[in-house]
Length: 65
Ligand code: SF4
Image (cartoon, rainbow, N blue to C red):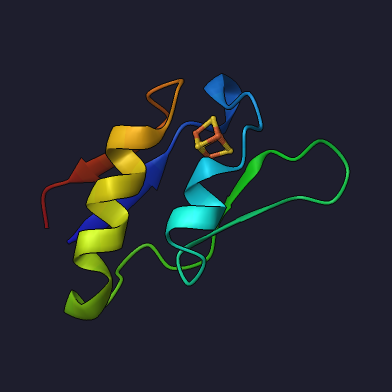
């Protein structure tokens, strides 16, 4: 699994960081998503997929590779 984020679309809700904190964080100033791990281990897949579904702005993408 490869993960990508379009930070220009992020509204800073923080759902991703709560759902998959090993993969997503937020910056301290504007709360924009910070991708901590663009190739997370299989143990994180379920949490990442939940975060994709819960992101209110469709910021998080699963990309091939
Ligand atoms: S859940 Fe989506 S909109 Fe909210 S901080 Fe994460 S990437 Fe941004």
